[in-house]
Amino acid sequence: MFKKIKNILPGAFLFILLALMVEFLNFSTSGITQNNSFNENYKVLPVPLPDTMNFAGEQVPMNHLGIRENLEQEMLVNIYWQSQTMLALKRANRYFPEIEKILKKNGIPSDFKYLAMAESGFTYKASPAGAAGFWQILKSTALASGLEVGKDIDERYNLEKSTEAACTYFKQAYSEFHNWTLVAASYNMGMGGVAKAIEFQKQGNYYDLGLNTETSRYVFRILALKEIQSNPEKFGFYIKSSELYPLIPTMQVTVDSSIDNLADFAISMHANYRILKILNPWLISTSLPNPDKEKYTIFLPKTDAVFIDLGENIIYNDTTGGKISQCIMDTSAKVQSVCTPKTIVHFVKKDETIETIAKKYNVSTEQIRSWNSLSDTSSLKPNDEIILFKDTK
Image (cartoon, rainbow, N blue to C red; front, side, top):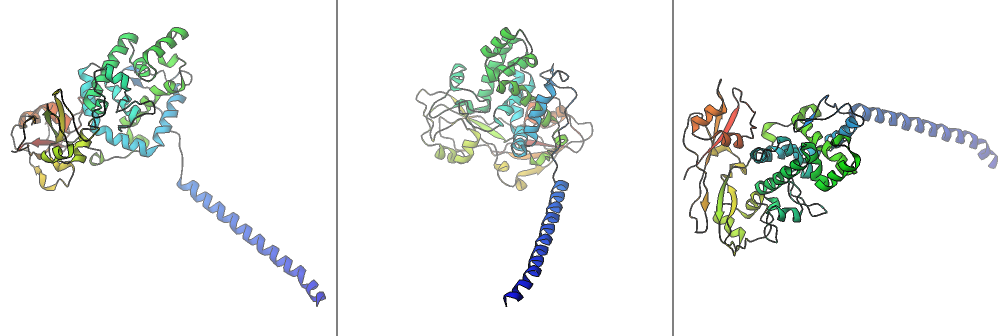
């Protein structure tokens, strides 16, 4: 019997060895096939860099040592962090018009709106150092700028007031450096830090200064976001106009007394607590104590059309006139009614301009640009849709 087993073992061993070799070959072939399939369907490519760039009209020396590499680093980080950049691009449509308006009023170049995008991505976050809001302002800086910061109110989250505070800083920094790129860098490093670097290194250009890692990347991050936002499809971001976050039509309510319960206040104004907080993130508690009877402006939705299906709220009409009122009310007394606007969609005809449409509807060109996220240089084409709001009582 043992002799028979001895005769069988060599054959069995050869069979097992052959089976293992076949399995190994199958595994190797499968691995190669899967790897080839992965390579065919997934590619990471370098990003195209512009030949020329500027920030606030000041040229970026693209041919200087390290400049293109620094820019490429920030381009890659923001392009391949698709979710964050996509959200920032969509949010910009909502917030850029107001920021641009305030920058222009203060004589600050429009490119500084990308600084806010770089700082916060238009999220109401607070940094580990305690900086808050779209402009990431420190509490001490906010108080010095006249913003109110406390347990019930934090005006760093007020878009208009925080942008005005940022503009105050930009103007002060420009009077120090007479260069907008250095102004932007100082927003990250501080005016004192930039001034010391200039004095020690004997260089007056941001791109020639050796700064800390964060500030060395800072302006390039702003430049990268400017390039991506200006040419989104070039970098793979395909966003339909209807998919951008729209401006929220609002009316202003002025209050000069305390509000004990913001949820009840919102309901009394035909809104709710959630919407009140979305439109007024500077209200950080559940009440608004106001013993000194200060005047505060609270935003409320001008229409619920942006929160529900627009369908029955839209009037497709390009001939209706009518003055659109501002709907500013004082709620120190009890308010019995609010404005109930309807949305008008105007289809642009050949040779029509923003000015002629504004005159037709008896509204301002600024209102039309604000409602439709149009910059001062935007023009209209036939069949474009323009949104207007008409109040009814």
